[in-house]
Length: 312
Image (cartoon, rainbow, N blue to C red):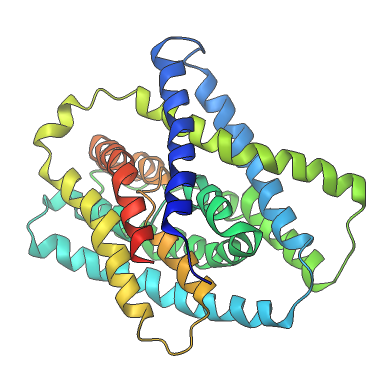
């Protein structure tokens, strides 16, 4: 399977127009400031879980998909863990500010695969690509909330209060993954009216996620970013160095399913995850730096995602 770059670019342009709509709506005060957390909750707790569930639960049973799922998990666990440790060492080597190194490495190693990655992969690779991305997300979550949290806690300036790990791992998204796997592996049929309702909820996910991204960007002036070298190096490493390194590593795997290749690379091309700011606050790390790095990577991703797609 080969991606048509012009098709990819056209789809990305449409997605970024949705981001622009969210940005304009906030800047022009067409919607209230307090709408963002409400819409984010709608996305993360309802429409995105519906998208994830419907992508696997209604997928026709295919033994080949099971082997692909195992393959992408075998790639995901060492890749996420290895990248996290590697970029922490790189942060030391390039003299990232000492109390930013954990956040810096975290921001480079992990991507916004749920909020931006899933909708973009769905738009570019279809439901088959999304189904593999959902499985790949298992490795993401387990790595992020274990050694990822340990890395961030190294930047802490106070005694750790921790986060509710059980609540995080049992989020609506992860429960949707588990439930969809039960339906898929058990070959449990889904009633047509239920499938129709979930599909309609799923159709909201992509435009809503892009719109919310635009709303989030509208809340930042960006003035303080001009002098933050670490925020820029984190964003550039996240958007270019990480996906290119991942691409070169995947090239070493013989006879790798092209769809797995594309899913992993597109996931790696996404900006820094928003959860980094939540974890920074929970672990008393530099919240301002986390917000800056996230903001810069989201802005630069408008240019870098099409470039990574071109490499595909």
